[in-house]
Image (cartoon, rainbow, N blue to C red; front, side, top):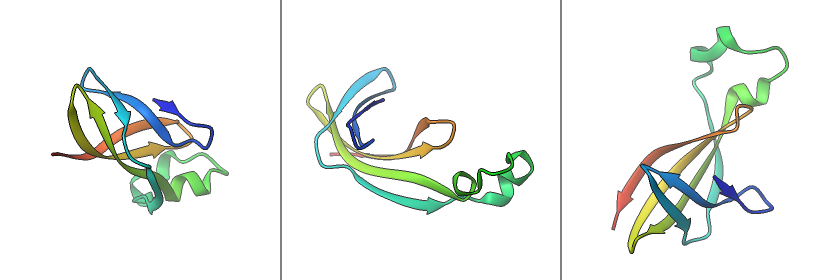
Length: 87
């Protein structure tokens, strides 16, 4: 995952293809299903347990334009593609 100075995605690899973000990424926060992870939660990580950072954007690869919704899991700092639609 390549990020700008504000932490917004500017490029990423998905299914062995490199994508460049082609629109301004939109960020929001969603609630996690905390009860699914409650037993494994470390003491003092409440915000990371309850909220997940989400991003929506258009990205291009090999002349293909795709709309992505990404999840940024913290504190693990891993990214997951939640949903896509192709144009």
